[in-house]
Image (tube, rainbow, N blue to C red; front, side, top):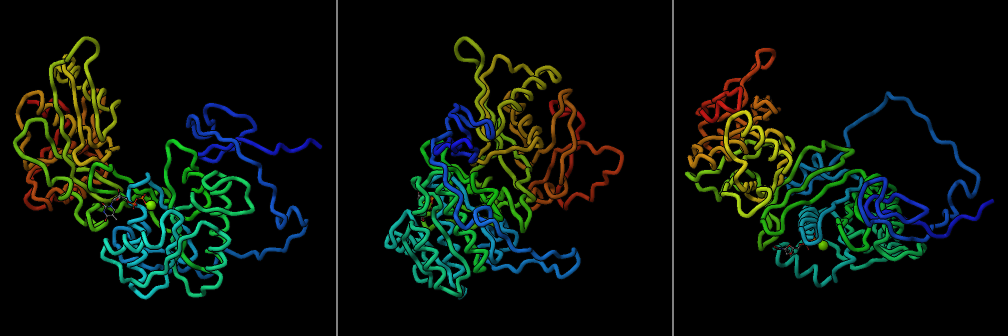
Length: 456
Ligand code: TYD
Ligand code: MG
Protein backbone atom coordinates (compact mmCIF):
# COMPACT_ATOMS: atom_id res chain seq x y z
CA UNK A 1 0.00 0.00 0.00
CA UNK A 2 1.33 3.43 -0.93
CA UNK A 3 2.35 5.53 2.06
CA UNK A 4 -0.04 8.42 2.67
CA UNK A 5 1.60 11.82 2.32
CA UNK A 6 2.09 13.53 5.68
CA UNK A 7 1.56 17.05 4.28
CA UNK A 8 -0.88 18.48 1.79
CA UNK A 9 -2.05 21.88 0.59
CA UNK A 10 -5.29 23.39 1.85
CA UNK A 11 -7.13 26.45 0.50
CA UNK A 12 -7.53 29.04 3.28
CA UNK A 13 -10.62 30.44 1.62
CA UNK A 14 -12.72 27.34 1.01
CA UNK A 15 -10.86 24.41 2.56
CA UNK A 16 -10.28 22.41 -0.65
CA UNK A 17 -7.33 19.97 -0.37
CA UNK A 18 -4.63 19.40 -3.00
CA UNK A 19 -1.58 17.11 -3.09
CA UNK A 20 0.47 19.81 -4.86
CA UNK A 21 0.75 23.55 -4.55
CA UNK A 22 -0.94 25.74 -7.19
CA UNK A 23 -1.32 29.49 -7.59
CA UNK A 24 -5.10 29.36 -7.84
CA UNK A 25 -7.62 27.22 -5.99
CA UNK A 26 -9.63 25.28 -8.55
CA UNK A 27 -12.59 24.98 -6.19
CA UNK A 28 -13.21 28.63 -5.32
CA UNK A 29 -11.04 30.47 -7.84
CA UNK A 30 -9.12 32.49 -5.22
CA UNK A 31 -5.43 33.19 -5.86
CA UNK A 32 -2.57 32.49 -3.45
CA UNK A 33 -4.73 30.83 -0.85
CA UNK A 34 -3.12 27.35 -0.79
CA UNK A 35 -1.01 26.70 2.29
CA UNK A 36 0.87 23.61 3.35
CA UNK A 37 -0.55 21.77 6.35
CA UNK A 38 0.02 18.47 8.09
CA UNK A 39 -2.47 15.71 7.25
CA UNK A 40 -4.38 14.96 10.44
CA UNK A 41 -4.71 11.23 11.16
CA UNK A 42 -8.22 9.81 11.48
CA UNK A 43 -9.29 9.98 15.10
CA UNK A 44 -8.91 6.65 16.93
CA UNK A 45 -12.57 6.71 17.91
CA UNK A 46 -13.80 6.92 14.33
CA UNK A 47 -16.03 4.01 13.29
CA UNK A 48 -13.67 3.07 10.50
CA UNK A 49 -10.93 2.53 13.05
CA UNK A 50 -12.96 0.35 15.39
CA UNK A 51 -14.89 -1.41 12.62
CA UNK A 52 -18.13 -1.47 14.67
CA UNK A 53 -21.23 0.69 14.55
CA UNK A 54 -24.64 0.78 16.14
CA UNK A 55 -27.90 0.64 14.24
CA UNK A 56 -29.59 3.98 13.91
CA UNK A 57 -33.34 4.37 14.41
CA UNK A 58 -35.34 4.82 11.22
CA UNK A 59 -38.44 6.99 11.37
CA UNK A 60 -41.33 7.93 9.10
CA UNK A 61 -42.22 11.35 7.77
CA UNK A 62 -45.31 11.59 9.95
CA UNK A 63 -45.01 12.67 13.54
CA UNK A 64 -44.53 15.77 15.58
CA UNK A 65 -43.01 18.58 13.57
CA UNK A 66 -43.18 21.61 15.82
CA UNK A 67 -41.29 24.72 14.75
CA UNK A 68 -38.06 25.10 16.73
CA UNK A 69 -38.38 27.10 19.94
CA UNK A 70 -36.56 30.42 19.79
CA UNK A 71 -34.78 32.60 22.28
CA UNK A 72 -34.98 36.21 21.26
CA UNK A 73 -31.83 38.18 21.92
CA UNK A 74 -33.87 41.36 22.23
CA UNK A 75 -31.92 43.03 19.44
CA UNK A 76 -34.68 43.11 16.86
CA UNK A 77 -32.42 43.56 13.84
CA UNK A 78 -30.37 40.52 14.87
CA UNK A 79 -33.42 38.39 15.69
CA UNK A 80 -34.90 39.20 12.30
CA UNK A 81 -31.83 37.89 10.46
CA UNK A 82 -31.71 34.81 12.69
CA UNK A 83 -35.28 34.05 11.61
CA UNK A 84 -36.90 35.00 14.93
CA UNK A 85 -34.18 34.35 17.50
CA UNK A 86 -31.59 31.80 18.52
CA UNK A 87 -32.54 28.14 18.17
CA UNK A 88 -31.36 25.80 20.95
CA UNK A 89 -28.55 23.43 19.94
CA UNK A 90 -27.90 25.39 16.77
CA UNK A 91 -24.69 26.97 15.56
CA UNK A 92 -24.43 30.42 14.00
CA UNK A 93 -21.28 31.68 12.32
CA UNK A 94 -20.89 35.47 12.21
CA UNK A 95 -18.28 36.48 9.65
CA UNK A 96 -16.91 39.87 8.70
CA UNK A 97 -13.82 41.97 8.16
CA UNK A 98 -11.64 42.65 11.19
CA UNK A 99 -12.79 45.79 12.98
CA UNK A 100 -16.24 45.85 11.44
CA UNK A 101 -18.00 45.36 14.80
CA UNK A 102 -18.55 41.62 15.30
CA UNK A 103 -17.32 41.59 18.91
CA UNK A 104 -19.33 44.70 19.67
CA UNK A 105 -22.55 43.23 18.26
CA UNK A 106 -22.15 39.90 20.01
CA UNK A 107 -21.18 41.44 23.34
CA UNK A 108 -24.29 43.61 23.16
CA UNK A 109 -26.45 40.63 22.21
CA UNK A 110 -24.92 38.46 24.96
CA UNK A 111 -25.54 41.16 27.56
CA UNK A 112 -29.12 41.65 26.39
CA UNK A 113 -29.74 37.93 26.66
CA UNK A 114 -28.08 37.73 30.07
CA UNK A 115 -30.24 40.66 31.16
CA UNK A 116 -33.31 38.53 30.45
CA UNK A 117 -32.09 36.03 33.02
CA UNK A 118 -30.48 33.54 30.62
CA UNK A 119 -27.09 32.04 31.36
CA UNK A 120 -24.71 33.28 28.65
CA UNK A 121 -20.95 32.72 28.27
CA UNK A 122 -18.73 35.02 26.25
CA UNK A 123 -15.37 33.40 25.58
CA UNK A 124 -12.73 35.52 23.91
CA UNK A 125 -9.46 34.36 22.46
CA UNK A 126 -8.58 37.87 21.37
CA UNK A 127 -9.13 40.11 24.35
CA UNK A 128 -8.41 39.91 28.05
CA UNK A 129 -11.36 39.85 30.44
CA UNK A 130 -10.58 43.39 31.58
CA UNK A 131 -10.67 44.65 28.02
CA UNK A 132 -14.11 43.12 27.54
CA UNK A 133 -15.27 44.70 30.82
CA UNK A 134 -14.10 48.09 29.61
CA UNK A 135 -15.88 47.66 26.32
CA UNK A 136 -19.08 46.62 28.11
CA UNK A 137 -18.83 49.71 30.30
CA UNK A 138 -18.50 51.91 27.24
CA UNK A 139 -21.46 50.20 25.65
CA UNK A 140 -23.54 50.88 28.75
CA UNK A 141 -24.09 47.19 29.49
CA UNK A 142 -21.45 46.82 32.19
CA UNK A 143 -23.87 45.50 34.80
CA UNK A 144 -25.30 42.55 32.86
CA UNK A 145 -24.90 39.12 34.50
CA UNK A 146 -22.69 37.78 31.74
CA UNK A 147 -19.99 35.15 32.31
CA UNK A 148 -16.69 36.06 30.70
CA UNK A 149 -13.60 34.01 30.00
CA UNK A 150 -10.41 34.55 28.07
CA UNK A 151 -9.18 31.29 26.62
CA UNK A 152 -8.00 29.75 23.39
CA UNK A 153 -7.84 26.17 24.56
CA UNK A 154 -10.86 24.28 23.25
CA UNK A 155 -10.40 21.37 25.65
CA UNK A 156 -10.51 23.81 28.59
CA UNK A 157 -13.58 25.46 27.14
CA UNK A 158 -15.30 22.10 26.65
CA UNK A 159 -14.46 21.07 30.22
CA UNK A 160 -15.84 24.37 31.51
CA UNK A 161 -19.06 24.03 29.55
CA UNK A 162 -19.51 20.41 30.63
CA UNK A 163 -19.56 21.63 34.24
CA UNK A 164 -22.15 24.36 33.54
CA UNK A 165 -25.53 22.70 33.14
CA UNK A 166 -27.89 25.59 32.40
CA UNK A 167 -26.02 27.51 29.72
CA UNK A 168 -28.33 28.94 27.08
CA UNK A 169 -25.85 30.51 24.68
CA UNK A 170 -22.10 30.62 24.15
CA UNK A 171 -20.15 33.15 22.07
CA UNK A 172 -16.69 32.14 20.82
CA UNK A 173 -14.70 35.18 19.65
CA UNK A 174 -13.04 34.18 17.35
CA UNK A 175 -12.81 30.63 16.02
CA UNK A 176 -9.50 31.49 14.35
CA UNK A 177 -7.82 32.01 17.72
CA UNK A 178 -8.99 28.64 19.09
CA UNK A 179 -6.53 25.82 19.56
CA UNK A 180 -6.84 22.06 20.03
CA UNK A 181 -3.69 20.37 21.25
CA UNK A 182 -4.37 17.14 19.36
CA UNK A 183 -4.04 19.00 16.08
CA UNK A 184 -0.50 19.74 14.98
CA UNK A 185 -1.07 22.94 13.03
CA UNK A 186 -1.10 26.46 14.43
CA UNK A 187 -4.32 28.34 15.39
CA UNK A 188 -5.97 29.89 12.36
CA UNK A 189 -5.02 27.11 9.95
CA UNK A 190 -7.76 25.26 8.14
CA UNK A 191 -7.26 22.05 10.13
CA UNK A 192 -7.26 23.85 13.51
CA UNK A 193 -10.28 25.96 12.68
CA UNK A 194 -12.22 22.92 11.49
CA UNK A 195 -11.22 20.68 14.37
CA UNK A 196 -11.99 23.33 17.00
CA UNK A 197 -15.33 24.14 15.42
CA UNK A 198 -16.16 20.44 15.23
CA UNK A 199 -15.53 19.91 18.96
CA UNK A 200 -17.55 22.99 19.95
CA UNK A 201 -20.41 22.18 17.59
CA UNK A 202 -20.59 18.61 18.87
CA UNK A 203 -20.84 19.92 22.40
CA UNK A 204 -23.53 22.47 21.50
CA UNK A 205 -25.64 19.77 19.85
CA UNK A 206 -25.23 17.45 22.82
CA UNK A 207 -25.82 20.02 25.55
CA UNK A 208 -28.50 21.96 23.70
CA UNK A 209 -27.07 25.48 23.91
CA UNK A 210 -26.88 27.97 21.04
CA UNK A 211 -23.33 28.46 19.84
CA UNK A 212 -22.22 31.64 18.10
CA UNK A 213 -18.85 31.52 16.38
CA UNK A 214 -17.09 34.67 15.22
CA UNK A 215 -14.98 34.30 12.09
CA UNK A 216 -12.77 36.95 10.55
CA UNK A 217 -12.86 37.31 6.80
CA UNK A 218 -9.27 37.64 5.68
CA UNK A 219 -8.18 38.49 2.20
CA UNK A 220 -4.49 38.24 3.00
CA UNK A 221 -2.58 36.72 5.88
CA UNK A 222 -2.54 33.15 6.99
CA UNK A 223 -5.96 32.79 8.61
CA UNK A 224 -8.55 30.36 7.35
CA UNK A 225 -11.69 32.16 6.25
CA UNK A 226 -15.19 31.50 7.61
CA UNK A 227 -16.09 29.77 4.37
CA UNK A 228 -14.26 26.63 5.46
CA UNK A 229 -16.91 26.31 8.20
CA UNK A 230 -20.01 27.21 6.22
CA UNK A 231 -21.11 23.62 5.68
CA UNK A 232 -20.63 22.67 9.36
CA UNK A 233 -22.91 25.28 10.91
CA UNK A 234 -26.68 25.89 10.82
CA UNK A 235 -26.58 29.55 9.89
CA UNK A 236 -24.00 31.87 8.39
CA UNK A 237 -24.25 35.62 8.77
CA UNK A 238 -21.97 38.25 7.37
CA UNK A 239 -21.53 41.60 9.02
CA UNK A 240 -20.75 44.11 6.31
CA UNK A 241 -20.15 47.79 5.98
CA UNK A 242 -17.61 50.35 5.11
CA UNK A 243 -15.36 51.41 7.93
CA UNK A 244 -15.54 54.98 6.67
CA UNK A 245 -19.31 54.90 7.10
CA UNK A 246 -21.46 54.59 10.12
CA UNK A 247 -23.87 51.88 9.22
CA UNK A 248 -23.44 48.12 9.17
CA UNK A 249 -25.57 45.43 7.59
CA UNK A 250 -26.03 41.92 8.90
CA UNK A 251 -26.91 39.54 6.11
CA UNK A 252 -27.74 35.84 6.28
CA UNK A 253 -25.89 33.73 3.71
CA UNK A 254 -27.30 30.44 4.99
CA UNK A 255 -29.99 29.66 7.52
CA UNK A 256 -31.36 26.20 8.27
CA UNK A 257 -34.04 27.76 10.48
CA UNK A 258 -35.12 30.82 8.53
CA UNK A 259 -35.03 32.83 5.33
CA UNK A 260 -31.75 34.10 3.92
CA UNK A 261 -33.09 37.28 2.41
CA UNK A 262 -33.50 39.28 5.60
CA UNK A 263 -31.06 41.97 6.63
CA UNK A 264 -30.43 43.78 9.88
CA UNK A 265 -29.27 47.39 9.78
CA UNK A 266 -27.15 48.94 12.51
CA UNK A 267 -25.31 52.20 13.00
CA UNK A 268 -21.91 52.19 14.75
CA UNK A 269 -21.90 54.98 17.30
CA UNK A 270 -19.63 55.86 20.19
CA UNK A 271 -21.92 53.79 22.39
CA UNK A 272 -21.79 50.69 20.22
CA UNK A 273 -24.19 49.44 17.60
CA UNK A 274 -27.61 51.01 17.45
CA UNK A 275 -30.48 49.36 15.66
CA UNK A 276 -31.77 51.22 12.64
CA UNK A 277 -35.44 50.50 12.26
CA UNK A 278 -35.92 52.98 9.43
CA UNK A 279 -32.87 52.60 7.15
CA UNK A 280 -34.26 54.77 4.34
CA UNK A 281 -34.33 57.82 6.59
CA UNK A 282 -30.70 57.14 7.54
CA UNK A 283 -29.54 56.75 3.96
CA UNK A 284 -31.34 59.87 2.79
CA UNK A 285 -30.44 61.99 5.81
CA UNK A 286 -27.66 63.89 4.09
CA UNK A 287 -29.38 64.37 0.76
CA UNK A 288 -29.56 67.93 -0.49
CA UNK A 289 -32.33 68.66 -2.94
CA UNK A 290 -32.04 70.64 -6.12
CA UNK A 291 -28.66 69.39 -7.25
CA UNK A 292 -28.22 68.03 -10.75
CA UNK A 293 -26.98 64.44 -10.92
CA UNK A 294 -28.85 63.01 -7.96
CA UNK A 295 -31.80 60.60 -8.03
CA UNK A 296 -33.48 58.50 -5.34
CA UNK A 297 -33.72 54.77 -5.95
CA UNK A 298 -36.50 52.75 -4.32
CA UNK A 299 -34.61 49.52 -3.76
CA UNK A 300 -34.98 46.27 -1.89
CA UNK A 301 -32.51 44.81 0.57
CA UNK A 302 -33.69 41.30 1.19
CA UNK A 303 -37.41 41.68 1.66
CA UNK A 304 -37.05 45.20 3.00
CA UNK A 305 -37.62 48.28 0.88
CA UNK A 306 -34.81 50.81 1.24
CA UNK A 307 -34.50 54.22 -0.40
CA UNK A 308 -31.05 55.29 -1.54
CA UNK A 309 -29.56 58.27 -3.25
CA UNK A 310 -27.65 57.67 -6.50
CA UNK A 311 -25.22 60.43 -7.47
CA UNK A 312 -23.64 60.99 -10.88
CA UNK A 313 -21.02 63.49 -11.91
CA UNK A 314 -19.90 64.18 -15.48
CA UNK A 315 -16.85 66.15 -16.39
CA UNK A 316 -15.09 66.71 -19.71
CA UNK A 317 -12.59 63.93 -20.42
CA UNK A 318 -9.23 64.64 -18.85
CA UNK A 319 -6.10 63.58 -20.72
CA UNK A 320 -5.76 61.23 -23.66
CA UNK A 321 -7.01 57.70 -23.78
CA UNK A 322 -10.31 56.27 -22.66
CA UNK A 323 -12.59 58.41 -20.46
CA UNK A 324 -12.77 57.52 -16.75
CA UNK A 325 -15.60 55.45 -15.39
CA UNK A 326 -15.43 55.38 -11.60
CA UNK A 327 -18.17 53.58 -9.67
CA UNK A 328 -18.74 53.19 -5.94
CA UNK A 329 -21.54 50.91 -4.75
CA UNK A 330 -22.69 49.67 -8.12
CA UNK A 331 -21.52 47.36 -10.92
CA UNK A 332 -19.18 49.08 -13.37
CA UNK A 333 -20.14 46.74 -16.22
CA UNK A 334 -23.75 47.72 -15.71
CA UNK A 335 -22.79 51.41 -15.84
CA UNK A 336 -21.01 50.90 -19.19
CA UNK A 337 -24.11 49.19 -20.53
CA UNK A 338 -26.37 52.03 -19.40
CA UNK A 339 -24.06 54.65 -20.88
CA UNK A 340 -24.12 52.79 -24.20
CA UNK A 341 -27.91 52.55 -24.13
CA UNK A 342 -28.25 56.26 -23.30
CA UNK A 343 -25.89 57.16 -26.11
CA UNK A 344 -27.20 54.79 -28.80
CA UNK A 345 -30.94 54.70 -28.07
CA UNK A 346 -31.51 58.13 -26.58
CA UNK A 347 -28.92 60.25 -28.35
CA UNK A 348 -27.26 61.47 -25.15
CA UNK A 349 -23.61 62.36 -25.84
CA UNK A 350 -21.51 60.91 -23.04
CA UNK A 351 -18.46 59.37 -24.72
CA UNK A 352 -16.33 62.49 -24.31
CA UNK A 353 -17.06 62.63 -20.60
CA UNK A 354 -15.52 61.18 -17.46
CA UNK A 355 -18.32 59.57 -15.46
CA UNK A 356 -18.37 59.18 -11.67
CA UNK A 357 -21.16 57.27 -10.00
CA UNK A 358 -21.74 56.87 -6.29
CA UNK A 359 -24.38 55.21 -4.15
CA UNK A 360 -24.45 57.59 -1.19
CA UNK A 361 -23.93 56.09 2.25
CA UNK A 362 -21.61 53.31 1.13
CA UNK A 363 -24.23 50.65 0.43
CA UNK A 364 -23.60 48.23 -2.43
CA UNK A 365 -26.54 47.85 -4.79
CA UNK A 366 -26.79 44.64 -6.78
CA UNK A 367 -30.34 44.94 -8.13
CA UNK A 368 -30.92 45.61 -11.85
CA UNK A 369 -33.91 47.65 -10.66
CA UNK A 370 -31.46 50.47 -9.91
CA UNK A 371 -30.90 51.03 -13.67
CA UNK A 372 -33.63 53.62 -13.96
CA UNK A 373 -32.41 55.67 -10.99
CA UNK A 374 -28.85 55.58 -12.33
CA UNK A 375 -30.11 56.65 -15.74
CA UNK A 376 -32.08 59.48 -14.13
CA UNK A 377 -28.99 60.64 -12.25
CA UNK A 378 -26.91 60.53 -15.46
CA UNK A 379 -29.53 62.36 -17.51
CA UNK A 380 -29.87 64.96 -14.78
CA UNK A 381 -26.08 65.40 -14.60
CA UNK A 382 -25.84 65.70 -18.38
CA UNK A 383 -28.65 68.24 -18.64
CA UNK A 384 -27.86 70.18 -15.48
CA UNK A 385 -31.52 69.93 -14.46
CA UNK A 386 -32.10 68.47 -10.98
CA UNK A 387 -34.61 65.64 -10.61
CA UNK A 388 -37.61 66.66 -8.57
CA UNK A 389 -36.79 66.22 -4.88
CA UNK A 390 -40.04 64.36 -4.25
CA UNK A 391 -39.41 61.73 -6.93
CA UNK A 392 -38.23 58.11 -6.66
CA UNK A 393 -37.18 55.77 -9.47
CA UNK A 394 -37.02 52.03 -10.04
CA UNK A 395 -36.97 49.78 -13.10
CA UNK A 396 -34.60 47.66 -15.12
CA UNK A 397 -33.31 48.99 -18.44
CA UNK A 398 -32.91 46.58 -21.39
CA UNK A 399 -30.45 46.91 -24.26
CA UNK A 400 -32.97 48.51 -26.59
CA UNK A 401 -33.76 51.10 -23.92
CA UNK A 402 -37.00 49.45 -22.85
CA UNK A 403 -37.94 49.65 -19.17
CA UNK A 404 -38.59 46.27 -17.62
CA UNK A 405 -40.69 45.20 -14.65
CA UNK A 406 -39.05 44.55 -11.32
CA UNK A 407 -40.18 42.60 -8.26
CA UNK A 408 -42.12 44.06 -5.32
CA UNK A 409 -43.25 47.33 -6.90
CA UNK A 410 -45.93 47.78 -4.25
CA UNK A 411 -43.50 47.50 -1.34
CA UNK A 412 -41.19 50.05 -2.97
CA UNK A 413 -44.06 52.49 -3.53
CA UNK A 414 -45.27 52.10 0.03
CA UNK A 415 -41.83 52.92 1.41
CA UNK A 416 -41.57 55.97 -0.86
CA UNK A 417 -44.95 57.25 0.33
CA UNK A 418 -43.99 56.59 3.95
CA UNK A 419 -40.96 58.86 3.56
CA UNK A 420 -42.98 61.65 2.04
CA UNK A 421 -42.17 61.23 -1.66
CA UNK A 422 -44.97 62.31 -3.99
CA UNK A 423 -43.87 60.99 -7.40
CA UNK A 424 -42.61 57.61 -8.58
CA UNK A 425 -41.18 56.84 -12.01
CA UNK A 426 -41.53 53.13 -12.73
CA UNK A 427 -41.94 50.56 -15.55
CA UNK A 428 -45.17 50.67 -17.54
CA UNK A 429 -47.53 47.92 -16.52
CA UNK A 430 -47.73 45.10 -19.03
CA UNK A 431 -51.27 44.03 -19.78
CA UNK A 432 -51.46 40.47 -18.58
CA UNK A 433 -51.71 39.49 -14.95
CA UNK A 434 -49.99 42.47 -13.45
CA UNK A 435 -52.76 44.12 -11.57
CA UNK A 436 -51.05 46.67 -9.36
CA UNK A 437 -52.93 47.57 -6.26
CA UNK A 438 -53.90 51.21 -5.87
CA UNK A 439 -50.86 53.42 -5.31
CA UNK A 440 -50.43 54.66 -1.75
CA UNK A 441 -52.14 57.92 -0.83
CA UNK A 442 -50.30 61.02 -1.98
CA UNK A 443 -48.04 59.24 -4.47
CA UNK A 444 -48.47 59.95 -8.19
CA UNK A 445 -47.15 57.33 -10.59
CA UNK A 446 -45.45 58.01 -13.91
CA UNK A 447 -45.17 54.76 -15.85
CA UNK A 448 -42.70 54.76 -18.70
CA UNK A 449 -41.97 52.16 -21.37
CA UNK A 450 -38.72 53.47 -22.83
CA UNK A 451 -35.72 55.34 -21.51
CA UNK A 452 -36.26 58.12 -24.04
CA UNK A 453 -39.56 58.92 -22.25
CA UNK A 454 -37.45 60.24 -19.38
CA UNK A 455 -35.51 62.62 -21.57
CA UNK A 456 -38.52 64.22 -23.22
P1 TYD B 1 -15.06 45.30 16.98
O1 TYD B 1 -16.37 44.87 17.51
O2 TYD B 1 -13.88 45.11 17.90
O3 TYD B 1 -14.73 44.62 15.59
P2 TYD B 1 -14.46 43.09 15.22
O4 TYD B 1 -14.76 42.26 16.40
O5 TYD B 1 -15.36 42.83 14.04
O6 TYD B 1 -13.04 43.01 14.81
O7 TYD B 1 -15.23 46.82 16.58
C1 TYD B 1 -14.15 47.56 16.37
C2 TYD B 1 -14.45 48.94 15.86
O8 TYD B 1 -15.67 49.48 16.28
C3 TYD B 1 -13.38 49.82 16.37
O9 TYD B 1 -12.63 50.31 15.27
C4 TYD B 1 -14.04 50.92 17.11
C5 TYD B 1 -15.49 50.78 16.76
N1 TYD B 1 -16.35 51.02 17.92
C6 TYD B 1 -17.13 52.15 17.98
O10 TYD B 1 -17.13 52.98 17.08
N2 TYD B 1 -17.96 52.34 19.05
C7 TYD B 1 -18.01 51.47 20.08
O11 TYD B 1 -18.77 51.68 21.04
C8 TYD B 1 -17.18 50.30 20.02
C9 TYD B 1 -17.19 49.29 21.14
C10 TYD B 1 -16.38 50.10 18.93
MG1 MG C 1 -13.35 41.28 17.61
